[in-house]
Image (cartoon, rainbow, N blue to C red; front, side, top):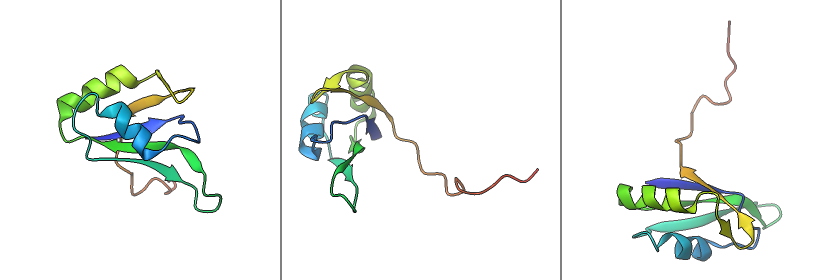
Length: 90
């Protein structure tokens, strides 16, 4: 399951995310999204856990908790909508 993590401290790394989530089970990847122009964290990232039950437990236990001084938001990642930039016609 892909997990979205927001409101991260700009100093938090992918390794920090992995450490927080591996308490709940196997983590196959953990990354913080970096702004290409500034080289700084955008304040959010993604964690991938193969076991859905463990992933749901991590979401439930870590959402609205503190990581590196920030209260984080943790939820199931939603797939990108290919038409998200399209305009509605009435």
